[in-house]
Image (cartoon, rainbow, N blue to C red; front, side, top):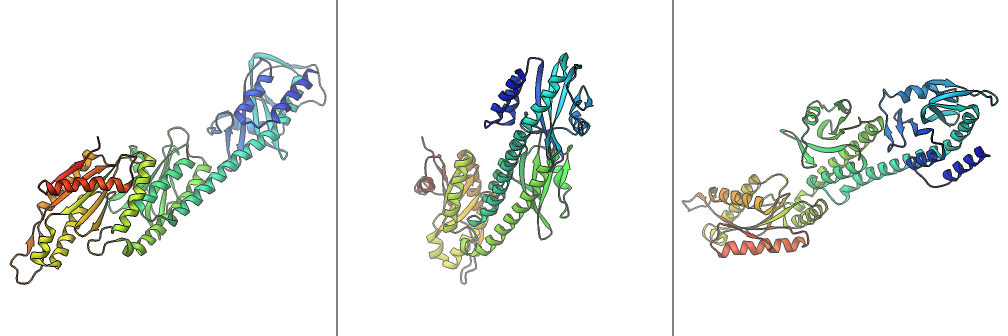
Length: 464
């Protein structure tokens, strides 16, 4: 009767919605105190690895004893104290001293996993207990199959969602500085067991685009080994994987996964290969679309963003700043006495001054900064990841660069072939509660202060 009661309580547990960890805890509570530990291991056919269901589906190292026990138990009912056994046809009076007991989890007549019982030292068990454990393992085999399949289904759904979301980015966004961090965030959410880095290829080498920093020299060493023919590179005992982004036979970037604990499994590698290919397609399409759209988004005179494009980028950067809680500064610039330039030298010279100032602005900024011709002789600049103190340094450097530069003009009947101009500037830092328009209104007020208090200066609008 005690055995029937035990099996009935096992059935009650199996009829509930439960994960593998809770299942092991509840099953162990039904066993007597002689059982010190109950573990469940499942073989993953996709990666040819064994996973510890109780320990968050951790992949066991290849030198783990469980792999050899998994082979040893095939064709047997138990592995007891490292020796395989088959039950006799009927219950006998024989007893065994058991320190460890392994029972197979069967699916389609094949060993799918193992249940491990660690017993108190020199614990004696009779044959009735072993028959009971065989029924016990058969009972929970189907439940474990369902738990594992649910886990696999969830991973597959998350994977396909990630693929779909990466592909959908270009429906609305074309700027790499915006879409690459989004790709990085999506990969990071899916490959949560490893750190993810996204690099783009520049003329001088690889440039980290997401996240902000990578201080592991081994990652950069892996990047140096990449060629367009490379599928992927594994280094540091397979804990670092570099997956190149390739377009038309050229490397355009790289996605790197790094772990401080487990190595990259075959499953991780397979997923990362597919996600990298999709990311490369998305980035390449974004590049192609941005070239098509550049004439609708670029100011023809200065080759900076036009106002329409700038307002789009402003919304994007505000959204990114709020999501990542990063600083963001706005800069408004006005060329001093620009009307006088037009009146004295003509509009062609005014255009030359606008082009010259635009070139200086572009050369003084980082790639991540977003300059635009806002209208007339006004320029607007967004400075992502920048606090107001840093923006003031950038502003002063830019102001001095314009002041010290000579801009060539070509005007008939005028001896002067070069002129110098100055700029006034207003700065404001985004305060997380305002809109993009309110941010630039504050920067514009700071610009007005600079113009009315002497020009050729940088003024700040700092909220108290």
